Amino acid sequence: MPSARVIAALFLALTAGIPAFAAGAANTIKIATVAPEGSTWMNLMDELSERVKTETDGRVKVRFYPGGVQGDEKVVLRKMITGQLQGAGLTGVGLGELAPQLRVLELPLLFRTQDEVRSVHQRMDPEFEAILEKRGFTLLGWSEVGFIYLFSKEPVRNGADLRRMKAWLWEGDPLAEAFLNELGVSPVPLGVTDVMTGLQTGLVEAVYVSPLAAIALQWFSRVSYVTDLPVTHALGAVVVKSDALAELSAADRETVMRLARDVFGKLAVATEKENLRAREVLVERGLQFVKPDPATREEFEAIGDRVRGRLTGKLYDEALLTRVLDAVDAARTTGAAD
Image: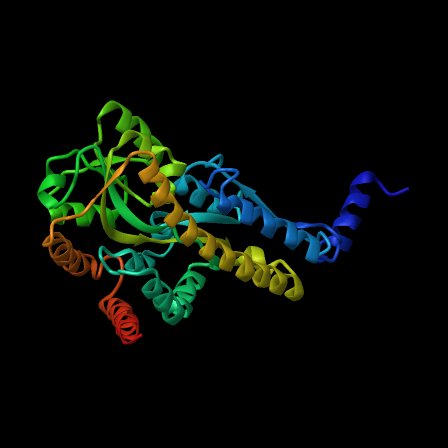
């Protein structure tokens, strides 16, 4: 009778070349995010998970880990490298760790309207997706945070007002650091999870965030004013390791990507609506939207121009910046014509 070792060796020899989907086992794509459970973002990701499971007859499962339970974005990126996770829902800061060029979409005062954002994405997305592919990642979909505003304990109508405050800097974010430095602000670097404590203790007095995120993170409860001038448009996306998708059959891979396009389309519409509604909620909660001084936009736009030059060659090259600026100008011209 063959020994147990021989039987095991025969089994391995017979099954080594059989891919998981052919053997009937489910391929699980694990994706981490800081988005909280119960948020619109997570509700739609749960919908994506269910639809993928149903339409692939259980051959593919997409499992999301919400609320930062897998760690902050740097930890999540490390887990992706080691294979503990196959994907992540990332902010612009996290995406910048994977592909610094993408941060060109978050340059200060680059966009004025959501229509401009959509138009530039339509024109530039193939290039950005190719950049991610070269890094070994596939874009499931953009999950933009929306326009970012200054929230503060005292009114900020111009750069001088902000310079008198202790302003937060997302620790490790070169783009925000460049903007605040050009503005003459000495920021307080903190991780996102430490900002609430910073506001409570007075360590920081001004933060930058979208209206929707200000409510979700409860930061609005520790400030009184919002400067009614968007300083940037925040990027977000869900990316998956390309080699994880390559393990799926061609049909299942197409199903995942098709469903992702549909769900992320819904998410874009929902995020825009919820940010508008969040502004109303902030007013209802007593926050005051402060109109900046007439010259403040010009001041901030001039700083934005300097930041673009300062980061050229560090995050992105001049050719990419030119293509993005051309796309913005084209969108702005079309909008003016309409």
